Image (cartoon, rainbow, N blue to C red; front, side, top):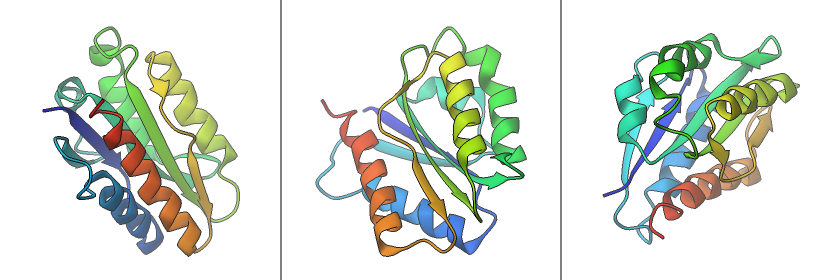
Length: 150
């Protein structure tokens, strides 16, 4: 069974709401045959990544960059996963108070360095998530999970 790994840092209610929407999309009843594994960024390991067929990454934007927790995740998995995960599909969502551009760019840069390919456009949210923001996160989760059933 294919595995979707969701790696997240959720230090706020807004980040938690986005994570829950992503998980709801990835585990929607119409998507069958995909194992969805959730790991906090500080707990996720190279073994988790190597066992997955796709990755979804969630982070707050902190001082114009991804969270330190997600950066720590990348630092831990980069070299152990570099050759074995080339071509792996990934997606991301980023929440911030105002500007999330730097965080999105940083996630894309490191994922690109790993040779991962974006399976969907990043979902970016500033401020309190709207109904549309939550729906975009649900769709992101569904797109990544459904892509593993083909």
